[in-house]
Length: 299
Picture 1 (cartoon, one colour):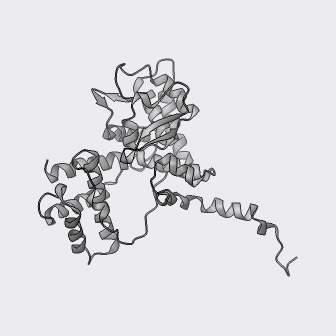
Picture 2: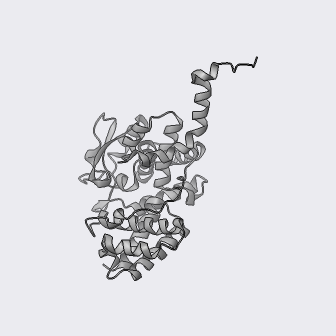
Picture 3: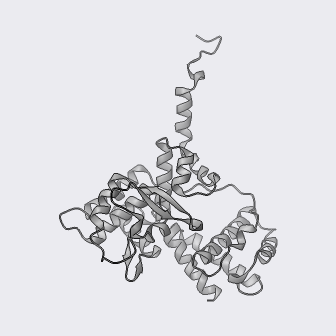
């Protein structure tokens, strides 16, 4: 398959799984098309040496611009690996220019409440539409279990079991982990399991395969619009960020959060600590031994 066709498929995935904005998608398209023109041979077959030469060409650029171009390459090659187009990601061998990492977009508690209120209303009644029950369950698993979009849509039916309080999730690097399954989610799951056609290996079947990431993205944005939220601000990835952020606000342990998110490196999880600085200051002021000590010379 040509570079152009694979770049189109990659950008479609970025819109669905990451909720990338039109400006981000346009920038990634420019970066990848420029890289395709600059390397010798198809970009899809480029090795680490070719990518180092490409990044050397970008040396005169601002660090943020060069870092964005490398990010585009890393995510593009990760996509190619996930899609079976190649077995490795050569961009991981390239040193990233030093930049300040952006903070993730998050939803407020009020935003999440509005999403759930809309989904629950649509899935209420004695015989709600199967699509509404499915949407409610997917929302529970995105926000309540912190799943990636790709992990959610590809869940096999065997990932859940009677009375089980966790999901068996196969994440990045083909590694399995246990993700929490709340009592709320278990209740919706019991409503959903009898509804899809029996015999499918997938929890969320669609035709002969499972629901696609693109369709999940479209359904979630449509739900956000019906709930009165900005659809551009809502995506599966943003709900995963909200899961992590709100858990930390509630006092969750960073190591436990790392395990739930499936991060190989806790440094990836630490980006969420930005949301909790006020709570930590309040905790120190209230609980630290120094908080109760008088400063000498003061009444």
